[in-house]
Picture 1 (cartoon, helix red, strand yellow):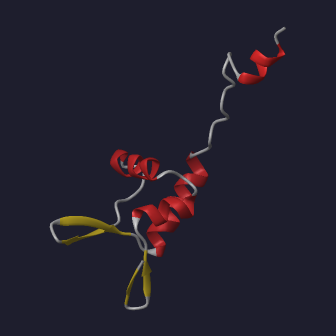
Picture 2 (tube, rainbow, N blue to C red; picture 1 turned 135 degrees about the vertical axis):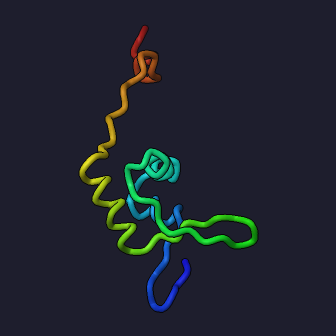
Picture 3 (cartoon, rainbow, N blue to C red; picture 1 turned 90 degrees about the vertical axis):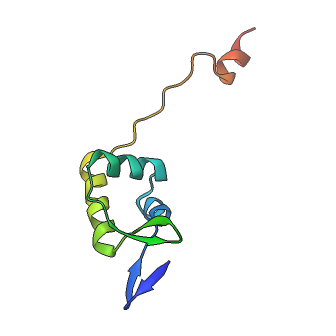
Length: 86
């Protein structure tokens, strides 16, 4: 967490946690252009995304409009099915 002139700045991992998605999902949305890229800063030869509250809100709006977690399918050879066989 960084603060810049009383504005909270979030890391990509923090934003993923706030949205309830995996970091890889959030990065996939960024790379595909589905959400706008937040401001970046370079420190010690590394680029860091600096997410503002408005960036987080845009990502949240995208998630609510387009993302729904699909239910998982049951595997054919589940442990419960194996135990019920005589």
